Length: 292
Length: 201
Image (cartoon, rainbow over all chains, first blue to last red; front, side, top):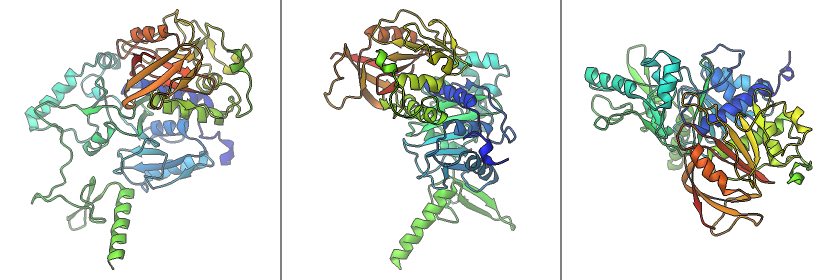
């Protein structure tokens, strides 16, 4: 079978229309999880099928697509999804450069480079409902969401403070959108939560297995759930001496860092966003070139 | 109003590629409420292009003012419903609102209607520019999600009754309706979250 045997974008037009209608409702009701009939994709659920269906419903022949997995363009999930998009969407070009892309599908990171109004970011979501940790019945959760009743979630956060002196959620930090719905912003680190607030780009979230689509429109309030006396805190990259760790590769001191453990047990740190790291490295080399 | 339904030279609105392009413009309108987008070079009026883009047999459409050509119904494949129950309602914006569309429920606010209103003209005025003549002109000052600060939208040919009815319909978030306004060249969206202030012309 050649790639021409597929419809443009793999999905049939009825599937695309349904996803498109769900996207519009998701934008009109910011943070609400719109149910949709998630299609069977030629990859396992949990491998980004929700994000992929959003991408394929949005994509046009002039699109410039970037796919990342934990900030990297070259990890398995990103490479597979990119190849699938290239195969099923003839004419579409792909890039690793954040500034160039018009559509960005991501697993668990938002790029360091601020996105623009001309870009759309699609996030892959494993667990869309932040209330699932306190309420197992979806019917009850839907009522709680409708009433914006997040008291039990706040109790959970309070219990963390009582037990550990700190809210221990490292990623998927519950975030309130436009003062009503609280979303699970997908497993992005706390570092990225601030990027949801008043974003220039439209953010779309797709949970394929859980059959939900939700959105954070541009220029919309997104506030992490906190208490007035316990401010929200992002990852702390200072070492024992209180110095901010820098990327071992490019030297960047203001990016989200991944920790690598060497054979000897030594730890090194490197930018999680590979395109950002390359850009910083290139800039540093240019500066060195000018100096030489 | 019937001339809006006549074919124009341009892209076939029944073709998936045209529908993708129209959808992306509509998506921009939803992301940036009140922003007027041109429909592009389609062979049919923006209203028909939007209906072709959004509808299929999974959803329902009401046409209380008979704006859709009989020959288009089979192509839209959509189920016909009443204005009170349909997921999409097409109406003539110059006439007063005389029905209550479905508003969704607290648990499932997505089960609310999307209204497509045909008006005479839509423009984002620069400075003191007014909407083109043709019926009563309304100057709207918009704010809310998707709008940094405020945005002005001048609409002519929209009965003010729609705005007061909409204010009632969207009063209790998350319930409400989402409006799409169309003229002969393009469209704009007013989701339920958009706050509308009516300015005197």
